[in-house]
Image (cartoon, rainbow, N blue to C red; front, side, top):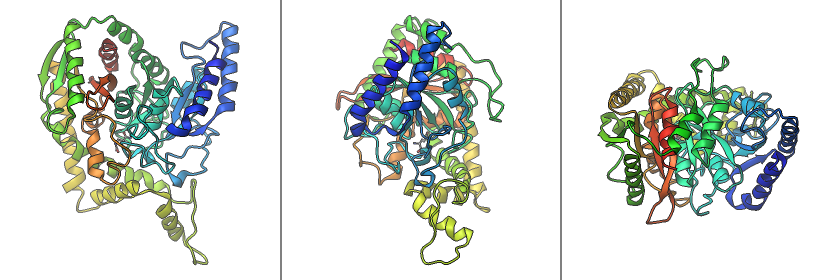
Length: 464
Ligand code: GLN
């Protein structure tokens, strides 16, 4: 297959199904085909850049793409065209991968369903009345519906892994610092990571290899050798896990966990045992506080990050009605009023409150202490296990509309994914089968120590 054929097939598929899936916010068809032609010419000269040369990709709309609108799912960035590429975008272009377009997401990556996008909800290809997860529901739905073979997502509290789980795709959150955040519009700088959204573990390993590695433009980027993800995936695919110690996290089960999700989880654990792994139960006692910790730290960082959307620098500018010569503050207020959605406003208010003087110790300070305790839980667990496992999300995809007015119910989706972000460790979600009650996909999560992302690939591939 040529890259032009592959890219055209993706574009045709998008034309056919995206009217009902709505995974894409913007298409980049002409440029993608140009890039595909260039790739085919390279191939003709025997000069391919690597295994993904010519393979098209979809990009979450929170990553800056030069010349291609980037909205973060928000009205406030409507019409903003970045003058530069995010480092991960530079790298996928450099690998010869045509960019199909930008994918839908919850506004500024806040949410677990894409219902908080200002540009309409994405629908789960398995059942169009259900959510595709979030915030990266667009990338996951694009891959699940065969609109794109690969996509990029971002994961601050689960936005790659949870959409992966509920759409039956593979999603990876790399080690914090393993992939550059330059050009990623920050939600919470200490939690955000860019990662692969794919249909197979091996595809994820290939894409991760393209985007990983040190970037001097991101001060938190790690200057460390990149493990051989592909070799790890291939090793796992042999089905032999002898000697691998796997810890089942006891806190991530029980009440509120859907029976069908737990049944598929248990089956996957049994498969790992059959593959020769030593499975033990491991307790991470502070994980029960992870959600509360995250929902203080995230809004605190987000409220500070979103201050830059001041109606002066980017995107939307709304002039207050009936004011002759409005002040900068009046313009800012009018713009932010209509430019930000409810969830964004909620988190700005929460974050500003948590950071305000006098409350800092009671909220943000406490949350930072808990964050350390959660990291310590991981460190202790990784003394007895090489990887930790849990279901990725407590339920399968829920119906659109079910939780959109109930923030706490929405936040509960992230129970199992959030600890990894707080501690900076890598995680993968792989499909574990369909839940009996509803026939919808469930996800299996594998977490590894920082910089040992290759273990996620090895164990994940053993389950395929
Ligand atoms: N659902 C989580 C939130 O709303 C995760 C977001 C993310 O990973 N970007 O914060």
